[in-house]
Every structure is written in structure tokens, then in C-alpha cells.
Length: 434
Image 1 (cartoon, rainbow, N blue to C red):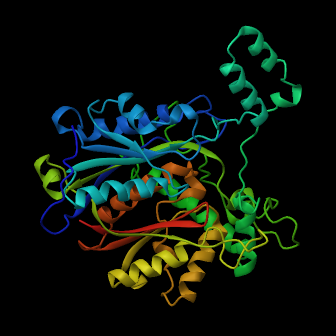
Image 2: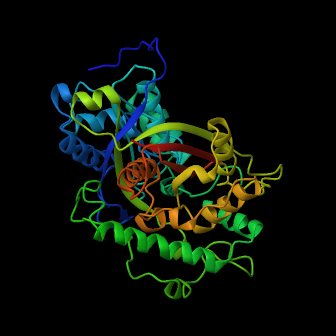
């Protein structure tokens, strides 16, 4: 199987979202502690293959996926995932990475090829495991070992090895910090929360609502064909159905604690999470030929970035996670749309404060307020957890099904996707009900 490499002479084709498959997300160092990115991603992909019969000649033209936390062995993650799955081994695959926007960027990559006629169908996805995060080797030790490998005689090799000291054996632990500032994403978000005056209570309300909405989505059966059991889990491990603002108010702040008004706690911030997700995209012709009904169409997308630090390496005027505050207005202007033209909104919940700051920024930039009853109606990252590269595929598959099943929503009803990402980036998109 391959893509044809030719662009259609006609107008861009519509890109249909057919459905998705993910494994339940788990807290790091939990049920998936010994799982690799490839194992989790293959499980999610197999769920998609089984559900839509994507074997043999019914297969897809390409698989695009990525991970943020990768070992050197994951250099060809997407392709190895295909080879470890039930998808046809002749399916081409490649990796992509844009921090937390990886999954949505993978969707856009597949969608572009379908729109141009280079693919008829493809799968996008992502996986991440903080449990299996790579440990770095001391750089001096690395140079010694490389020198030993280059040594021409056993004695020369022994001389190089003799240079190893105990300090060289201390591994470099992965740091959740932005290289330009040295601050964690949580500390950046705390700075943004102060800048925008986001209260603790507002954050706790958003977090409690996310858990409540996700619990309802599971209990109603909405997620039964989007989530495949894995390693003994059938639901997202982070889900707390009984969460309330009262319980959340009892938690101590963990970010921005150097300030007297710290508001960000473990309850209104996403935990480190392991998991994987995939989503099937196709042309209308391919879907019809295979008897599959599109849930929605991907009609617009936009990426953005902000300069989030000043010349002294301190947080700048624009927050680390605020790129969607610019990308969404730009995307809507290009599409001739306003907030009032959307039925549903899916904003990735890296932190409750970041969601609320983004909503406030949209209003400041002239967009209408978002109806909170239309926001993350099946729960989002605060409840599901956030395996970095998996979040985009989870959101696209969820929103497509929400639009398809929305009572009273006419064909063409829209949903907006907004995902913030490390490095001051953002990836956004528009879906329309089929």
C-alpha cells in the first residue's frame, strides 16, 4: 500500500472523521508502568482495525503518529506500531512531534493528504508514557564510552574506561521545564493565572465539571466504541466521579506557591499520564465504498506560537500556553465564523487556569463568550488525564461523535478544537457534523 504522490486536479476533497479508538488513560507508574509507547499505540490501533475492518485491501494508505517522551529505540515509532498491530504491514507510517499538539498535528497531516487526493484514508494518533520516560546518560560518561568504542586496542579501551568516576553514573532525570526559562509548565500556568486574575474557585468548578461530564459519558455508554480495555482498565484511571468543588477546595496548591495567592492544585491540574489514541480519517468516496458513515468533517485548522519569555528568560507578556488565544481568532476570521457559530467546544485542559485564561483572552480579542454548557461536554484532560501526544486524537474522535449524536444539531453544526502545547505553541481545528 502507498500514497500516490499526485495532487488532485480538482478542488480539495472533504475530509471525514470516521471514528476513533483509544485505550483507557492511566496515571503514571500505575497499570501501564511497564508498557512502551509502541505497545500502547498498537493496542489503540488494533481497536480501530477491529472496529472498522481495516485489514487487507480494506486497509488505509498511511499511519501518522508520535510521542513526546521517546527513547532512542522509538526513532521509528509509527512504523513499528504498524508492524506490531493487525494493520496491513505494507502500510507506510511516519512520526510527527509538536509537544502536546502532536496528536492534532498528526490529524492535520493525514487530512491534508486526503484533501489533496494523495490518500483515500489514513489513521492519525499518538502515545506517551511518563512511566517509561527516558533517562539521560551523563554527557562526560557518554564521551568516555564513545572514546572506548573507538579505541584500537584492548589496553586503550581499558584506559578510557578507567576514566569513569562515580559522579558519571548519576542519570539525568527528565525535567518538566521549558529550556528558555527553566520553569515547569505548571509554574508558567500559575503566572498566567495571576496575570488574568483566574480564581481558585473558578478552576475547581471547571475541574469538577470535567470529572462529572466524563463519568456521565461512561455511564451513558457514549464511550463504549471509543475506548478499548487494556491491562485491566476499562475506564480512565484518573476519573473521580465523586469529585466536588468542596473536595477540591481542600487540596493544597502545588504551583505558584512562592506567591501568597497560589491557586493551582493537583485537582485542577492534569496528572502525568500514560496512554494512546487513534482516529480514522477518510475521503467521502472511501467511506461510502466501505459502507462507513462519517461522523464529521474536518474543515479548518490553524497553528500558532507566542513569544512567552523576555530577554532575561522570565515569563513574558504572553503566557506559555496562550497560543490558541491568537490561533483561534485567526482561524475563525479566515473561515468567516464567530464563536456563536459553534455548537460545541473542546479545549484541552492542561490546567483549569489555562482554559479559563484562554476563554478570557478570546473575549478580550473581540470574540463572543463561550457557553460553558457547550464546553468539554464529555469531560476532558482534567478527568481523562493527558498522555501528551494522545490528547489530540482523543479530542477529535470524541468531538466528531458528540456532533453526530447531538440532539437538535443540524448537519454542518460545528465544533471547535483548541490544544495548547509546550514551547508557546497551539494547534486548533474546526469540525462540522456530517
